[in-house]
Length: 277
Image (cartoon, rainbow, N blue to C red; front, top):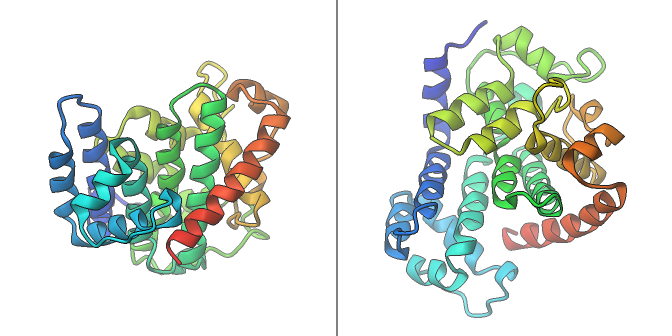
């Protein structure tokens, strides 16, 4: 079975309208002329996204005691700088509502892995002095391709790590494309920054191309390893995340940085889980 580019885009648009909204929001926030009202109008176009944004704004993440059900108030009090994080979390929660039968994965595990990876990726990126927000988005969205493949109605079932230790190889055999490649195609369609798609494209093997130093992919790879430390790894991936010396050097971090990141990301992850409980 081989899925065409048009089919993948169609499936992606059906599955995750909130992700497309996130891409539009990122472009808006990059424009210094954008004001808060324009951001609110964009979020309000998606009622489900609006619900999740308001709910998250009331969480312990922002230390706000008085809850609100008003989007204008919710966005205004967290501030423009936090809106992208808030919408990213809300969009990811919105699309992780259905178990991935193809992969034998509960929706809750997919969401937990995405959030833990995003938290770790942002912290590692900041330590490496690159844009943490871009890597945060990459961590949240790296699984979008797998969500799309699960909706393809192929009837395929991932047989497990004993038969296929690397799930990406199984995807290529069954679908003709890996989940990472699907995610990159969708992010390009939704006009996300190339830094986000580049990180996802190379995160499973960030050292595969010695002529191209993909720092973002390396940071995302190490962040996936941090999520695995929490017990939130996913089948068919654990062999990809070893924190080798070459990866640490490319990412510009040390083993000590990785340990500190793991502790901080664990706390951040716990707060995020509490915010949607």
